[in-house]
Length: 459
Image (cartoon, rainbow, N blue to C red; front, top):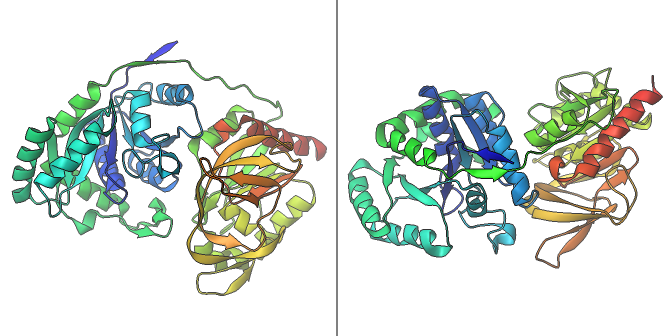
């Protein structure tokens, strides 16, 4: 048994849209300027926010998800990866208590703070309020036992209003108010239909993060924040161990560009631990898949924003179709699934040919389709699972397909809602669901084994 003593703090808020990612990114920059070695984490099934953390630190941000992983697994993931860091910053998800199905605290920021014994810094919106804000903060403090809320930062607040708000909150709630953040458009991050735009699309991202860091250094007591982080209670964890399942180091080509960029760092790491070698390629820019590829991993992202370029790269589409027809395993999630369809309609209503491996097309619906956590039960045999086997996943997409597959039954937890989804066989798993591979060891192992078998067959 190991002991995690890493100083740490979790940034949370009363609701989404409170500026958690902007504040977290600025805070990471502040702390990096002080010469601290940092580790960054995101609560829940999010791909976009970790991209901003990674751009600040130039090191991967990891996800900690208590729907996919047990409390012991999350403690181990955090304890092992945070080892050697001077301080770890965890970003919450949605509102502090908002968890599974929106009706429980499971997998919420609160659940993560409690599991990892992490002090919480609450971002509170100071617009048009004073005493009422104290009532909101006090309600969050006392709504559940052991909330771990250790401090407050007032966002969207002027300097003149802050002195009054801070005095009231500290008096009524008994916790320190570490500072405020004024409204600053030059530090804001743009949003779109899946949340924030990706970090790679913000041309002046570093300038915006620097601007937020400057604001925090001016109006927030960073030293007090560090002191809170250093007061985190140590916790014990049992290290996780993963052994290779193949010996011939099959090459998995991972689609990585503006169209395909949604990957869990832990999923990529798990494939490497199981014995695979990962190589990036771009369906947008490259003429074909890598020559030494033994399998393809097509993640989620925004193919709908690059549909013309993807369609006009005919040699890449033909290369992927040929690879599948000759037996290469393919694992495709959400955006990758859309790319494998016969056609994809852009957001202006124009239809474009895609890879043509899967039947039908897909189109923009203007609203979230089948949003949130799900449990998948296999109905057909494939490398992902055998009939009756189950694993957890999540969906988050504004596009829908006229043919979603029927190899699995998706079931919403704590709900009766269910639907058929996904295509699956001995060389394919494709559908809207996103999978966290450390929580689906059989799928990860079978994918690597399928890649290994393909490599042996063509040797």
